[in-house]
Image (cartoon, rainbow, N blue to C red; front, top):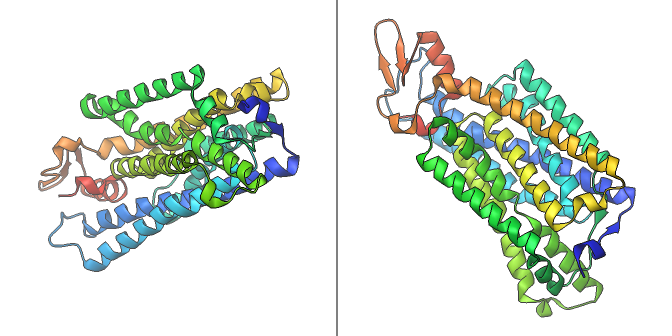
Length: 367
């Protein structure tokens, strides 16, 4: 039985319930990302005194403890609470309609970043958040409102051996290899782009949780005892856990290098594109929309949402680049003359250096 044969239209209450859980997951995801970013900024702020002088001693233990607790809360939210709500949402709807709602994470970050991490959103960031919300509304109304259930492990194995899905996996592997190469050997812009999208690209390779839930549903419908569950199901569950964890690790590395808006927007935007491509191949998204017009509007909604992510990413790059330095230039960051601070390769006044360092410099660059 193919996914197309197994798909059945769900009621309005079912797929909207999935969206509600997805929105809750986005709120948790935004709070977690802000906590992770805050864990780095508290160390950055402690490294400068009120006049912008370079560090003169060890950072207090309480500051390290605060950073550790914040990072722990962020990791807990990203690794436990957020995935739980995401998995719950997948029991009600297709990933193609749920994944775009992760863009709400960016909206909440834009709304809360000024009061939590001191990064005030600009007008363009507010406009980008509006585009994201508009794109999500279009996707919710015109997307794939079907769901799959009652699959066997043989059905999943057969679907994974289809030429289209194998081609998709090969293409994703080549894309990840390209990003790794750019991170290690590309110039500054290429490394920035690659760090931004690699986490979301990996996380988006996620047919495994949906398929695992469909297999479990089929086994429960047949009253199969737990000890008789097929080994292939546990392998699906392992992959369903491993891909998001790898993506989270890559996101944390990106957030060490760039501000919260850039890191989160690149992650979410690349994940939405990755999930959308995966869903189109695995679950035949465009074959399950109500009409050709709906398919056009669904694509338009993705473009609008992605454009909002791009605006946020460009804004984040613009605000972080002037005061950032290359990873290779970690040493001798603070070189003071009588009237100005030389920050990497950019000379700033004392006040500019203090404000820029407190809001933009990342912990990797603190000597």
